[in-house]
Image (cartoon, rainbow, N blue to C red; front, side):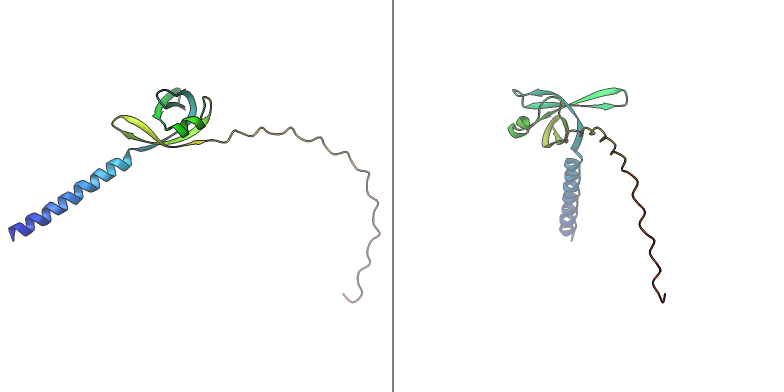
Length: 127
């Protein structure tokens, strides 16, 4: 009986520790939206700057070759990344569409001559 209780208790503790480990890994996923302020091809990193209140915060993120080729300094991006051993590693880099410039208002159409009045219709009989 004591062995059975010990085995059950061991299994419960094992599942509890496993759940905590998975929760900790999931909590390490982050996201940053800002402007690419630096691209380091040699180190395969990008630096994303975002303004928080009155300060600018920089986040250095490791990227793969494809992500590195898709971004350049000055791009507005949203980067989803994970933090492991103190290193930020990108999972995805999404460039934001450039803001569309508003077109100049079209010239006002020329005023048309007043239309001639159509003759009034007679009401239909029986109604």
